[in-house]
Structure formats: structure tokens, C-alpha cells
Image (cartoon, rainbow, N blue to C red; front, side, top):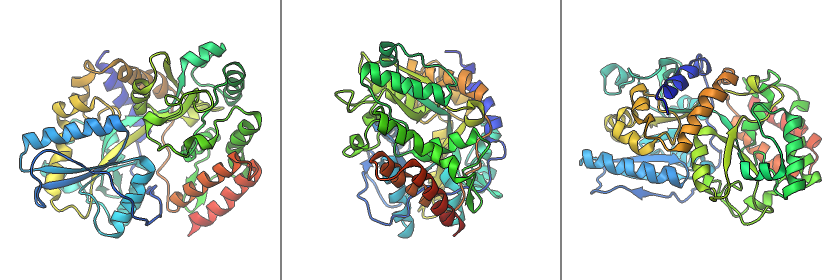
Length: 447
């Protein structure tokens, strides 16, 4: 792969990240239940002064690569050890909420773009600006528009460590068996026709975005020029949300939608996604809605006879819907016992080729240009396909990413998932769910 692919990806992100340093909300659940945290210790004797607690969400591939990175850093810096705390995505935010309430946040926090501002507004994160000014955190090799996505007000509270785009990942094996063409920039009618034909001809069902619906609702609303989370309210009208729930109602009635019961005993880790995990069409799906950085893991997790492809999420106006997203950030918490050591690690994570030789873009396209160039030729084929998708498909068909969600969004997301499940089980109609989401959601947003 040409190393200019990374350069193009970074350059294209300028339009997506420009002006994105404003307020945003944390998408953590309001649950205060204590959840047992999975912990991975790196090698070496730990001590309270020399130990850094690093929390992240991810799949098994990310966990393994991150642990290797932590071990390497300890090898190079014997005075520093790590308490690594990986979690599945939804559990991650519950754990952070519990830790924040107990003034025991991890030293280093992996952060999502849409969740950053609530942590900032609640005073939970350290401003990285002084460390940039002192040179301890070197961002000189990074696109500054991408860096700006980690700002809130006058402060820099998070360092972007990767960019990604919404990606529709599907089984080419199944679609070819059904004789269905999946192409870029599919309309909603084309998508629904594909769902029906594939189910009729192969028995494989569709997984739309179960449990992660807010991302696809937002995507569909963008096609109409509507921002889902506005200041103090939900954008659009109730009918705009009914359209999303109608996908579930229609799919359930017509039989082509994967039952939510499939997810009851599964965590939401990528390796257990119904696209790549299951024993029959009843427990598997022919597609999934993900972000591009998860594409390589889905490819690696699929059976040898299940060829995987990637394209854009369906929409009636993909260019308006689609966007490039600052995929993840690293932050230093207010509770960090040794913030300077945390900053040194983040600086190394961003600028070290050795580190990124291990990570290989699993969290998205590296933000450091020299690092991106250095690892480009080492990427496996799925990672190269991921970058090609960002450069050649997503970037030319994208609009500026939405401003981060405002206060109250986390409650609305919880409500959305509850209503989605009720529609799938026939306990509510799409009309009822859309109306309730809009009415109660606006009440939540106005508090």
C-alpha cells in the first residue's frame, strides 16, 4: 500500500474536524452500580508511585495489542508499571461513572468524541495545554485540525489517537449466494430490498444497529439536515424518529430482522458480532453497522469461507449523512497520581513507531504523520482495505461531523435502546416509539 494513503486520510479529516472543539456530552450511563472491572497487569513490580492505571474499551485484538504496548513501555521504563483495565463498550462507561463518583478515575482514560465535554464540564479531566507548551506532549507532527477535536473552550483535554468513518460491513459470500449487489452509497429502498432478497434466498437475517441505535439514528437524521442532539432539545420532529423504529417494526413483521434474543447471552465485543459468530442463519447476520477501525477485527474473526466487504451505511443522501470521526482519544484524569508520567506515556503512544508497530492502526488511522507513514507498509491486508475505504469511499462522500452531543444525551440513548427492544418484541409500534423518544427525550435534554 502506498504510504500516501495515510496522508490523504489525515488531510481529508480537516473538513470533518474543523470547528469541532466545542461542547459535547459524555455518553456514559447514569448507572452508579459497581461493576467488576477486568484488570490486566503488565510485567514488573508495581508500586503506587510508579503504577499507571489505564482504562480502555475494546475487543480481544485491541486488548492483546494494548497489553503488548504496556509491556514494552515498562521494559523501556522499568520505573513505570501498569494496571490495564479493558472493558466491553457499554460496561466501560458505567465503570467510569462509578469511578468518577468515588474520586478514583484511572490515570489514563480512553475517550469517545461524543462523550468528552461532560467529563470536561464536570472537572474530571486535566488540561493538556501546559504539557504541550512545555514540550512534554509533542503534537508538532499532527494535523492541528484533528488535534482541535480534543479541545473544549480554551483547553486541550484529549489527544486524538485515530480517525474512522461509519462502515457497513457485510458478507460477500452471502450476498453473492443471493445474487444481490451491495454497492457504495446505497439508498434506503435499495437496502431494504437487499434485506428481503437475502432473507428469502439464503435465510440470513439483518442486524441493523441493535444496541447502538443512536449512531444510525443520527446518520439518518443528517440526511435531512437535522442534528439529533441540539442544545436543550432533540432536533427535527417526532416523525423523523418514527422512520428509524419503522426499520425494526418492518423487519420484525417481514421476518428478515435478526431477533434481539440473539444478543441476550453475548457481550458486544466485535468477535461475537452475528456477522462472524454463530452456527446458523438464525443466529447470524449478513451485515453489521460498525466503524471502519473494527473492519480488520471482523475480517480476522470471520470463518475462512466467509468473505467480508465494506462500504457506506445506507441513507437517502449518503454524502450528507456520512462523516469522518475523531475515533478515540486519550485523556489524563483529575485523579491521576502522577500526571507527568501519564503524559509521557501518551506522548510515547502517539509518537513512537515501536508502539504503533504493535497497534497497527487498530484504533484508527494514527494522527502522527511520521508514524502513519512508517507503519503503512507493515499493515496486513484488512488494515490496508480499511484505509482505502476511508480515503477512496468515505472521504469523498462525507460532510462535517456533528458537534458533540449536549447534556442529557446519555439518558436519551438509554431510552432509545429500551424503545428499540420493545419494538423488536412487538410491545410498541414504531409510531409509539418515535413519539415517546421525541417527547421524553426532549424532557431529558431540557433538564
